[in-house]
Length: 440
Image 1 (cartoon, rainbow, N blue to C red):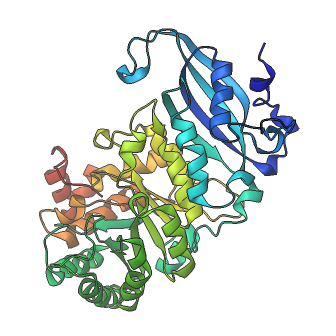
Image 2: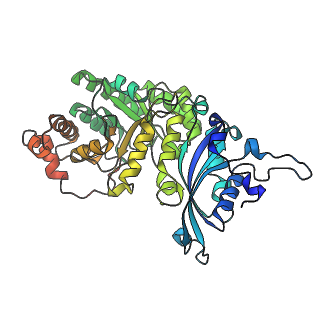
Image 3: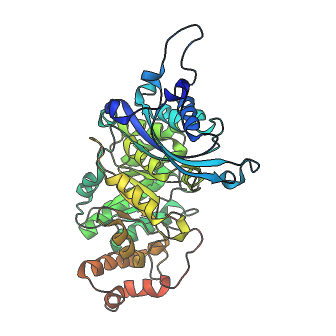
């Protein structure tokens, strides 16, 4: 039986005010009684010392994080995962669900993260292995967040594209080209059928390709491509930079004709994104640099779906995420969980377009469509368009032809027999291993 100190960090979920708590799922590996460890885990991320010496108060009722479910997965582990503290025995693995009162940190993402994956979470005594698996917010909490300004419906309205995926392309070579050569590639890809031509996540405001000049040329090329094709297009400019430059770079890029902006969410910071969302006049699209060090280990860190949900409430209209295939080191289950985190109801927050990416080309489109199970996704090849042997116009055309084959329910090889661009893509990419540097 737990002593009163530990018992105060447990609760029946049915007795709690659902509007007052966020729910968190963790995987833990701990020494000793898992119930005691879970209680200390809650204490460390909330009240810690929950009364003053010489006072009879108890701060736990209002302020404590509380265990509402504890499942002991294994009590016979020989040691902690990853060779940590190898001399310890009697390690238990657990799944714990915690109700954490959001009044402790309010509707501020930095403070939320400080509580649920900060010092108290990852430095709790006798619990060196922790992974935050999921986070769920009550509608009452979500009301304080703006979320996406456009969402999927807004993006579709901007492009006048419905009932199919939205086709992105990462302009390549991604690093080293001057603005004139770079913009010509984007222009060619729009003529071939891309909806969105984007800067690479590593191409920022550089001396050899300044954002001001690049966005002006691509903004003009976008308008010209729209006039020639009769279809709306988006130039997605990367404005990732120091926080104090984001507003300035937004204004430069948008004034020059960029009608969506790319931000590397984690390096820049979600609070900075939320600030930008309040100023932005165009869609904001997230990219995933630095997510792997947080998420890749199965039993340690933070699951990618947590970041997806946080990016959504911060205000991203589309979220580029590690996609399917061995190169991305994410399971199909994980990718689909991130897609669901973009699309599932979330109070009054609009949905975000999920864009699972990584070494895609016309031949991978059908598989992604089947796995995602909806047309509400973005498809984002890089080399699959810009490395096409006939050039980016043909590369983009091959993507559109692959979708036409899906709609017509015709095998890709059969459809390619009548479409030279798709046939060339199959011959060039079909048996090739992914090329280093082909990222989205």
